[in-house]
Image (cartoon, rainbow, N blue to C red; front, top):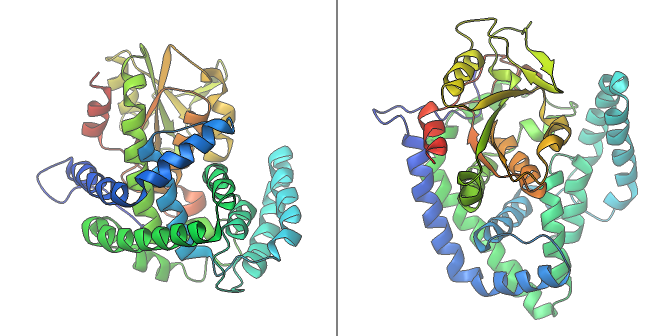
Length: 371
């Protein structure tokens, strides 16, 4: 069964992807700073005055890029009607979180409504406010829209000519990025079209339809933005004494994993010697790094609570490409020193159907822990 991305090296360099990603990220930052440095400086002044949480200039540039990519991919679905059905989607999402027992039923309804309402092409409007409302409706971009909302507030205070110039620059930058990323990183999503074709009849009307069918350019966006975030958070991570590795349960070999709760944390019990989680846990113990399992990304914030505003504990988050950035944003919002590393490919049975145990690049993990 095909998967939408794979970071496994096909050369003698086990760190090929991460080396190429670092080089390409420098390329993107250089290009973006030529155009947006003044915009970003002005935006940061606005953010500080409004008491919004501020981020590095490089991260702000990634938010600009994110906005441009989302305009390219989703503006045709947004429109003023979103304000009428958004309360329904918000209610259904809150219902599934509050009452887990009804989640399967609610998700089936969300899937049908999402296909008929959210994925119906309405116009070619590039109204950023309506686009952000559409993104909120999906609940696939909750962390991203928090940041993009501040950009929209900043933009709405500007004169029309300023807004128009900014919009054109954002669109041009996103178009340039997609073309460059396809050339430099395209090999890592080479099976995406095959994956989509194989599952064309499966995802429509499912609640994860939008998530699972996101385009390769969003994989590239998440790759580069996660690299930028790692750089911004590196210093705080290095100087924090205790390190904890957070692993998703999709890395476990057995469906009936023997992991148990310990102080409200899911801990591996080494029930299988050749399980990726068990092997990593034993290696991490030699480095005095604790390993904790995260059952699913939807409850990530809850699991982060023990380390909120921590000055003594840093986290290494592990997730697939489409989940890593949003998870990193959550950790950053909660003032948790962190670094992130991608799963080599996706294998969660819920979303990606294969159910094949996932893995990470241990050489890259060693790099992150080299403090």
